Each structure stands twice: as C-alpha cells, then as structure tokens.
Length: 377
Ligand code: DAH
Image (cartoon, rainbow, N blue to C red; front, side, top):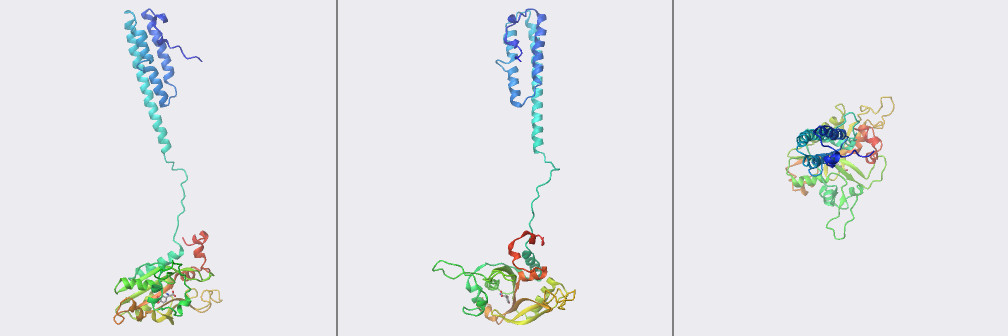
C-alpha cells in the first residue's frame, strides 16, 4: 500500500485549487487522513514521532499548510484557508494531547499491574529452625536455677591446664587426670603454656571466683571435650552445666535442698533424691546424686511387669557429681576458707536429655539428622 499523498507538500496552484469553495473539501481530506492515523496503537516514542509529523515547527503537516497554502494564497482564498487551518490545528492539537494522556495512563497501569502483589499465589515457605534438644534441656535447667537466684555465665572452650586442673586442686600427676583423656592443642615451640580443650565446665568455678567476691551463685552451660571413643554413651564432645554457690554460712543442707529442688522441678514432684559418697579433688565431701527412677516410679519394675529398662531394675538412676567446695580451691582464688563455704555440681546434659526423652544413642545429638531434630521442635 502506498502512503497517502501528502497534499500540504504541494502548492495550491499545483493542486488546482483556485476557488474558496475548494478549500473546505481539501481540509476535510487532510483531517480525514489525520483522524485515520491518530487512533493507531502508539507507544510513547511513536506518539512523539507522530506529533512531530503533524505539529513539527519546520516541516510538520500544519507548517507545510502554512508555508505552501496560507502564505502564498490569493486574497480571496486566504480567509477561508486561515479559518480552516485554525480549525484543523485546534483539532490536531486536541487529539494528540488526548492520545498522550491515554498512553501515559496505560503505561502507568501496566507498571502497576507488574508491581501488584498477587495474594492468591502460594507464598515462599521458608523452613523455620528450632532449638536443638540439647539447647532446650540447657534452657530448662537454666530456667530452674535462674528462678532461685543463680545467674548464667559462659567460659572458654580452650583452657589452660591451670584452670582445667591445677586450680581445681588437681596437680600434675594426680591420678584423676587419667580419667580425662585430654585433647592438647599443637602449639608453636616456646608457647607460654600448653592449651587444651576443657574436659569439664569446672574451670569456670575458678574464673568466676577470680572475678567476683562472694556471694557467688552461677551456673555454666557449655561444651566439653574428651578423647573418648564414640559409642552409644560416649562422644568426644558433650555438654555440662556447672553450678557453684559460695557465700558465708552455706551448709550441706542448703546444698542438698537446692539439688532436690532442681531434680523435682526437672523430673516431677514425686521423684526422690539420694546421695552417695564419692570423690572429686575440688569438693570435700563429694557425693554422687541419684534420682528415684521417674519411669517406674522407683520400683525397678516396668508397667508391663518386667524389669524397668531405664534403671535396669535398680529403682535409682545415677545423675551427677557434686559436693561442698574443697577449702583448698579457695586458696587459688584468694577467698578466705575460714569465712566462706559453698557447693558445686556438674551435670552431664547429654545423659540427662537421653534419660528424659528416651534416646538410646548419644551420637544422634551430633549427627544433625533432621529426622531426629524435627521430633523435638
Ligand atoms: N567436673 C566433673 C566432671 O566433669 C563433674 C563435677 C563433679 C563437677 C563434682 C562439680 C562437682 O562441680 O562438684 O567429671
């Protein structure tokens, strides 16, 4: 299809227009062409081109009419052409502006539709994590002790032999060091002191008392490390909560009362506690605390009639070691052993969690298998 003839590019004389009566049809033709084009589907760039094609100052169609028709017109044609041109200009300008507004609006709508949030679409489901069972048990125990005035402190997992052993009244060559097969770090020659992964949370007893005068009431949750071969009840890393209370006039009764309170809070009010003599270099006397088996109500017999699998028929379950702080320990932290007294305990968290939640292999705590973790949301 050839482009429509652009009459405004030609002079009136060339178009054969000599009579005023010919003016109206001529303008009608131009206007019809404009009306045919102005409704086309424009994007903004094309609209600008179209606007310039018609309204461009130098060579737009209307400028051509001015130059080719109006200016050279004979006096009898001029009024008719002038009037028709004004009318055409008003029409062209109005329509082109109308289109501009429409194009702008539709572009805005399009942008809006792209940005609109479609609430009917399925959302992005992000997996929500939860606390590890060990962390949950820590929390449970912390809550119990915090409720009776203890505060929670934490300490370094890399220790010096002084804090891990000596200041706890465990001198070098003391036989209990053999029980704690220790990970020593490889250090450059000439290092000031050997370093090791703490074998228990007890070093924090010393660090706490060094920093703070009595009264002291702290618990210390944390990871500890020993060169144990992994099996269902041993792992090279495990968890403890240390407890320490030191003040004037703390008695053995305060000690057992506190432990009993904790055990009842943790296992339920119907359990009983007992303690047996034991030995730890940093406590004197030292004890081992037992709880009456919460699973068979301390009978040793399961509900079905057989031997209770938790306490193996013993009716008691060994819980943790504890004792009155050995006066020798106070000597390491400049406490006056004649004025203060206190107690300490060290709870193995993994064993407690296994007991309470019926878990028979300590390794599951460290394997991070989500099928296990999800059972304790
Ligand atoms: N630190 C000891 C261990 O890991 C546990 C322990 C026993 C801690 C008696 C204490 C305590 O504070 O009084 O085997």
